[in-house]
Length: 202
Image (cartoon, rainbow, N blue to C red):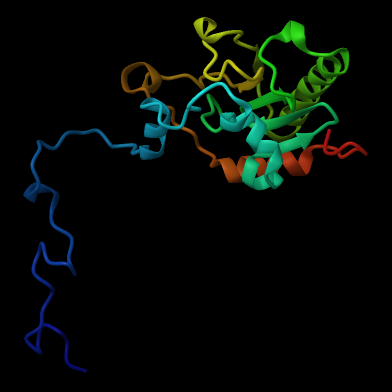
C-alpha cells in the first residue's frame, strides 16, 4: 500500500483546516500555566442569567419545581419545600432548600414550611455524608440583597459540603471555581441516594 507521503500527499500543511496550527504561530508568550476555560460562568458574572424582576414569573426557584426533576436539578420534593442543586455551586453537592411558595422573608414562612425546610436540610446533610463524606458543612441563608442574596425575592437556604483543602486561590484571583463533577452526575448521585416518601423524595 502506498503511503500518503510516497503518493505525494504527505501530511496536510500546518494551519490548514485538516491540521492544527502550532501554538507558536498564535499571538502571546508561552508560560508554564494551564488554562481552565469556564465560559458557562459568564451568565453568572455578567448577570444575564438573573431574573429581570422580583416576580414569580421571572423566579428560577418558582420555575425549577415545575420542570422534570433532572431538568430542573430538583433532588427531592416535600409537600411544602424542595431541595435543588445550585446552578452555580461553591462545591460539588451544593444544595438549596426552597419553599415552593414565592416568599422572601423567613418570618413569613408558615409553620409547616419552616418545619419542612429544617427537615430537608437535615436530610440533605445525611445524604451528602453518605455519598461524598464531607468533613463539614456551611449552612445558612442570606436575607435581602444587601446581605448577599443573589435572588432575594425567593427564600432559599444553602447546604454546602466542605472538605479540607477545598478552597484555593482561583476564586480570589480569577473569579473561578474548579469543580471536579458535572451537575448532571451530582444530581444522579444525590437523587438516587435520597430516600423516597409518600410526599416525594424527602
